[in-house]
Image 1 (cartoon, rainbow, N blue to C red):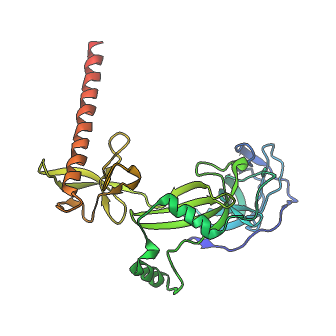
Image 2 (image 1 turned 30 degrees about the vertical axis):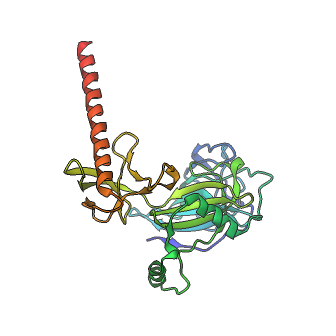
Image 3 (image 1 turned 90 degrees about the horizontal axis):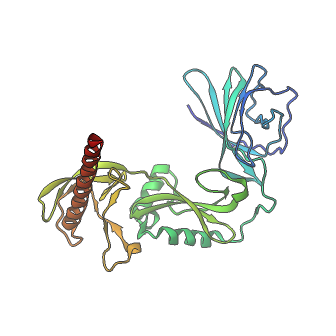
Length: 325
């Protein structure tokens, strides 16, 4: 069972009277502490208020402040504690360390933990939160957001049993260096927004530079899966198509062929930025409407069949060439 803690470590230096010895150390990226440490029999006793850090040479090291995020104990009795690094009282996005504990001693630990911080690291935002949110919303460009729909706002208040609950995004200051990795030299002070859009449906964490308003990165929180649908096409009768499911609706998108096949509604003109998804509630695309869904499914199905035709012939040609040789 997971347990949440609100403990924050404020000490900048941690010392251990016991000499720490490591059986195995995996170096981290430049500017980072080791990514993996496995201790030998002289491993330190675990104290959830401390993180035992060794440098690449196996010497005990200093650590910056940490926040205990959660803990759990697995079926074999090993406990796992996840910490998030912070500096200047601000959490560092994606900088986590997981400490694995057996019989009260640290068995191993792994994660991403910053050693060398930039000298010019900002600690105060110069961009107002409201302006940062406007930058994030401009970037997403949705037609409708959850907090703009009274029924959705009523739902979240009831779900959380909190009359003040809302989908309206509130910015949280974090340090951020990107989604792929933690890079000390690239750290920026950023506002982190959880933005839930209704149309087109998406939910993303958006990171906005708290100094200049630049969009630093985004993280999708809704991930789609391919689904098999039925389409009443305008010219080819009833056909089986591949769509995706967002958890709330089906779209004319799929990822199984090449880099994916996505069929959009340009609405008017040729402005790709104005394109929206064709959607369906039950994946039975039998709509004859002003959005012209029936023609969209024709295009989607035909593109799938075209890809399949050339894919099969490419394989057949390769097999023939192989046989000749």
